[in-house]
Image 1 (cartoon, rainbow, N blue to C red):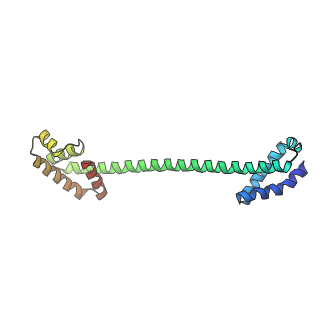
Image 2 (cartoon, rainbow, N blue to C red):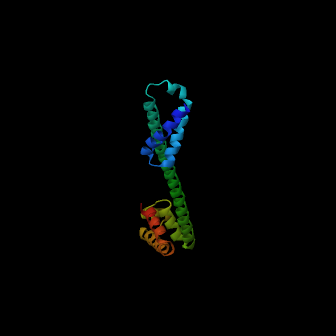
Image 3 (cartoon, rainbow, N blue to C red):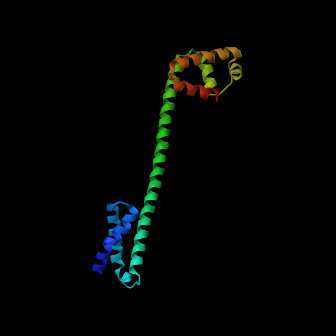
Length: 171
């Protein structure tokens, strides 16, 4: 049996090398096949076509190896996408916190009525008419307070933060 394994070693190696194109990997897979042959030696010695059995076993082992690699690659890609989404979420949270900090600083510097109009528009999503009704002021006065608050925001906030703020106000 040992002579049989020795005679198949080179044949199996070259057979596997055709598929994997990497001599170290081919050597590892060959060792796996030789171990399987040794474990199944009694069963194999009773077969009529030993060559066909061993080469089919080798081909199946190579296919199993490639399937395993494909599953690992898919798994790695899924993990990568999860990490990317988590990273994007953390980045988004940081950006939102930065905008909120800028907004808080901005609001502290506004006169009380401008701050009130700005908050009603931004936080409550009220229209100018709704703000004027709620505060018992003219719609044009509400518009002027909001315009002045936005002018201050534009001058004090980072441009990208201001654009996000405008988007939040109007959409």
